[in-house]
Length: 495
Image 1 (cartoon, rainbow, N blue to C red):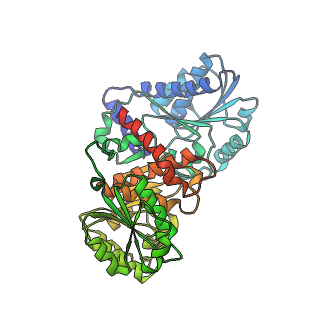
Image 2: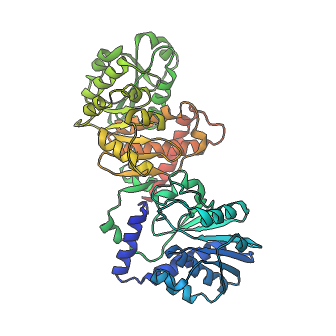
Image 3: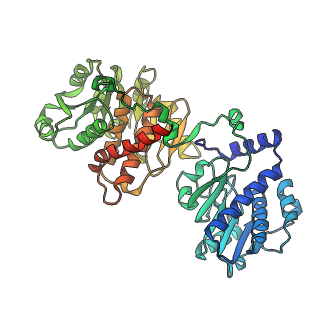
């Protein structure tokens, strides 16, 4: 269940299920029951549940949950404004089945409540909350009462993760059939709490019609293509990765990337060093090899050996003409290329030159910008969400774009995209991006596509950080990869 559905796509899934013979009331009954199950599981000893029902199908789910909880012995205070008979047909039917009293939507509902169920608005909210609804949401947030959200917390755009005015801060969110982009994209993700996915009876076959192209970046997305070494393999089959070093006073980033590449599975790794940095690099490298490569000509000579099949430039390299020339030289050569940090910023004034050099290459290019580097290279990119912006950038540049952050997005030029689900705040430390760029490089060296390389490296990066935990620094990331590989081996056994 890796597919992520926008509000529009989820509406299409509902419609296709109904057209296929599943009654809408059955879907709504199952959805509301799953919300009641979450309340019962989390709060078996609660007495009073306040349920807030809005004017759409999200409110209909709330009416079902209210009826279910009444039957389970909870005292329910249900808030709803307006005439329930004017709700959408299925929601109106569920409102008619609720036998308890209804009260106006008001903070008064929270008096003596142990739990709040948020059924005001679902993933398809189209305008900012304001006035009475905004005040109600703020009152719920400041009440200290735990909130269970139906679908997504009210105020979160389920397709983009943006906050529309204000939003509920939920302890948990119960959604249906498939997760939504807003469950993982910031800042919406911070409002969702623990995520739960309920099967409400929509058949998986509807996805054949919808054809989603956005996924949660979890091992099941790529595990069947993971380049696990074989008994008859050897290092030359696992690729030869090259990392371009910066000058003598800025060599650490390249070495971090090189070690990340070696740990992540590249058969051989070489640091391509300017002459003035050879001594400092040599004093720190053991299993990683070292070659002199001064400027663009040195890179061209090194990459003329086609056994060197993946090249990374950018970490600690410096911004300017020399870096630009080296990047363009690498793009004219054979290897797959990773462009990070200074390799991207060096083209801030002339991005189209870079994109022209990338488009039409036989072998993949992966860019790994953080938000600032992305803005410098691509400028203002239209799009409602981070996914839209990453997709647009990938299409424009011809490269797979790994747009980093707490909700890293990986997007291919063909329009496929994934949102990472295992980030951690401990990755916010100097050099962690360099280590990840090296992991991307390792995957490319082993023959993966740019999209698979980006997805796997981002997941490994997050998993390594989670394995280490508090106190992480960038040097720790490569050393945690053996434990991450143990996790991947377990996934492979189950695949």
